[in-house]
Image (cartoon, rainbow, N blue to C red):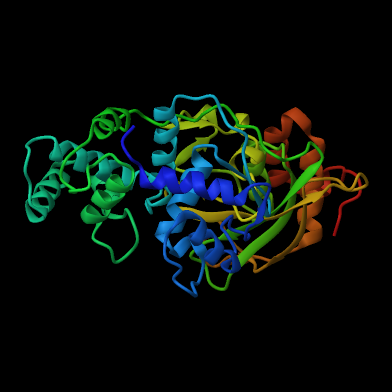
Length: 392
């Protein structure tokens, strides 16, 4: 296979990590380990950095190692994974896709893949290009592209970096483009075809969550001042469908509008609504899309007014058999009123006891949770039997 700088460094990084290294809440190496890690993979130590994720020469191999299965993350620790019997080209493609997702700032996390495939396409059209000619040709193709894809491509890579040279640099580091930066390698031609394949939701991967573990989640409403957020404990095997119903309760939404979860560029929603490009939220457990501390997903409620939320794992904890889950253990800010009518209150006061009575009723409803939630919202918890002891 063509020399791939990123994969060589990823393998060296995995060997250095070995039986384990601590990581931050966001799943990257601690600043104290940046020096030893850069020495292990043969890149210069920059000295002080704000976070290891800011050093591309280190972060790209780190992401590639995780995406290709060389490293696994378990809450606050990374370990070298056991070797997997897989075609090396497929392992390389997994690493490339992982880095492209990580370096895409658009919501669907496709921008870097769109741009890199377009660069490979243009480079294959003739044998000689100058950097300016390549830049002009790619820009022309983007102007003719679907607007959403072009917009995503321009959001690829770090802010302040010209995206097309950055795409060429990444492809060169992966061995898809030769060292001259203008010649597509055989591996690059193979990748060009594979990058056109859609990324579909996969079978839920194995995770390190135990059956009785809980995710402590911070559900924060975005673009709202003063801040509004809730802290909830939810079983890690709960589905995204249940998480939707929990968010509806803790933020006092009425569940009268459509909603979509976005996790790692993939979308999940209620299958009843048949939204395009959305997988079934009831088949995806939290442990799949929120596998570790620091992981986060997006939740949009009301596709017209766009109430956007960020849901983040603060930590993984053991359950208490005497407490009914899910439960709310904290929060800040009064929730805005949905579909507000002039002359009526604009907010709903944050009342953790009321929230937990509703969550308790929701947890007892079992398979009929969706219908039960509508009853909770419509009639109020005073008409329902509270279930079990609720943690405060």
